Amino acid sequence: MSGTRRMERPAPERPATPTAAGATGAPGSRPRPRRRTVSAGDRAIFFGPLMVVLVGMLAFPIGFALYASFADVDNLFSLEFAGAANYQELFERPADLVTPFLNTLRFVGVSVAAALVLGFGGALLLNTTLRGRRWFRSALLFPWVIPTVLVALLWRWIMDSNLGGAFNGLLAEVGIIDDPVSWLGSPDWAPWVIILAQVWHGFPFVMIMLLAALQAIPDELYEAAAVDGAGPVRQLTAITWPGVRPIFVLVGTLEGLYAFREFATIDVLTKGGPAGSTEVLATQVYRLFFEYHQFGKAVALAALMFLLALLATTFFLRLSIRGDED
Amino acid sequence: MATITDTAVRQRPGRRPNRRPRSRSVGATGRYVLLALMLLFALLPFAWMLITAIKPAAEAYTTPIIWWPSTPTVENFVAVLTKTDFPRVVLNTVIVAVSAALISTTVAVLAAYGLSRLAGKRAQVLMISLLFAQMIPTVLLVIPYFLIFRRLGLVDTLLALVITNVSFTAPIATWLLLRFIGKVPKELDAAAMIDGCTRLGALRRVVLPAARSGVAAVFFYTFLVAWHEYLFALSLTSSPQNQVATLSIASLVGQYSVSWGQLMALGILVALPLIVLFLMVERSLIEGLAGGVKG
Image (cartoon, rainbow over all chains, first blue to last red; front, side):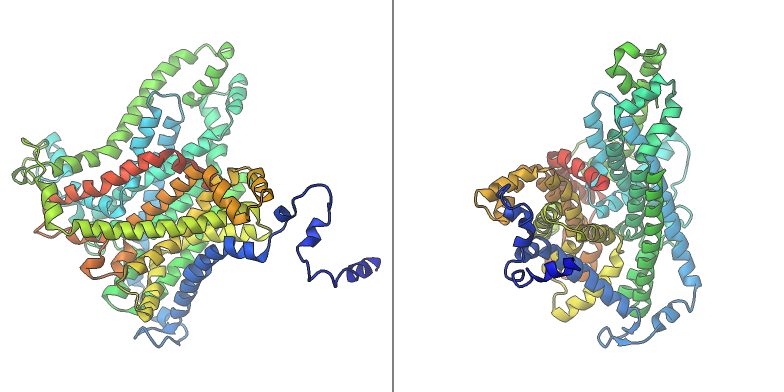
């Protein structure tokens, strides 16, 4: 009761000097009133630009797209609300969606798994006292630096369907094949070529993240374990793995998200072919919208992709957090 | 792993277990072999790119394959520079990538400073939305941007590419910069403010110079992401004078007028500056990426 009265009394003063309230707590001790307070102007300067990006350049377009997925977008201008018509149209022939969905699962699943294995292996190797360690690390990061389009171009040339292609030429030289294999022209092989290109481009990022995680594990833990008689395998499972597991899951999730939305690799290598064997959801959306001009279906499928990404990320990050609590 | 115990053991030589030295030398050889294999996987494609680029036309596409050119030549590089619109394409790419990187880094410097110095309870929400931005499938963004830019008359302009690039590089940049700005002691800018600087002045005169390498790394990273971008360029630009490098490369694939040797020469001209730039900022870039994950 007395509390309320006390609050009422200084109230008239407050609006005049809203920022002074915090500083009165310790008036004479130190001259730092400015540091303790955040004016609205400061907030606008420091957070304003980011908010413009997050709200104006991400949230607004996304909201716009999500609304458009429930609107009539056939002429791209009217945007009248149309209920679930786009989604109905999208699911009229579910078989059309099954192949790109399964292709996406394989592309994301295999490329992330391979990138994690290679990246973790590389990180473990680099986290030792080898001579030329930094040189190795720099060189292993080169594939990550070059543009995805160039990565795809390079692998397209390596996997060329003639014996003039390096991979065919190599296999012929060794005697494994006599006639050139059309790697990118075969529905059996093409999906693995795009995965190969993706892994080559993506594993360095995984490696560098996991290397940082490994270096953050204190040496004392290993010393103590060695004193207690724990062998290399036991140390890996008891110290190394728990130490990197949260970042392992996080990096895997990020790689998965990047692979899920990957477009350039596939567009340049195969354009989704042959016979749709490398068509994934991202390339499917692009084709529906920009090539077939089925705008409604495209935007509905894109919205579903977003939902899928959200669900998968939540699931995996939960996993990561649970790993932390173990 | 044996490798890790080595490090631990070496710091305390007195406690070295008996078997250690032997397993270490065996382990080291094995590790070099494995690393060499990984290096082959990472670098052989580059080697093939270089070899193809310096091959004379007659040796580029033969059966059986010619692994090393009889007379290395620069004719492919000359052809690329004269035949294609390479200088203009590079200029476009640099304009887009540098503008996007400049804007993103500026946004990120301000926001990262704000998050590390002024943030209240809303910091968590902001951090989560930065991560959230990574989840957006690019194709989902392309569609609304295409519709919006059509209405604004921005389709087929470099400005459209700058805007779309900033939309996803600014959040990453903020995330990465947080670690660098967070590391600068708060006492530094507090002292500057007591000396009469405004907050912005303190950031510019004290914090920014102290976090210089981090800012450079983040600038490079956003520059790289914008340079790599392909889907927006493909969807939002059409005329040749607005073509960026990724789009130009992709459009040359499968054209009979452009040989593989020329394409690989183009690849080298694109890749080499990026690799050199990367080596210049590698250290802080890696630190920033790692910190971004840990934070």
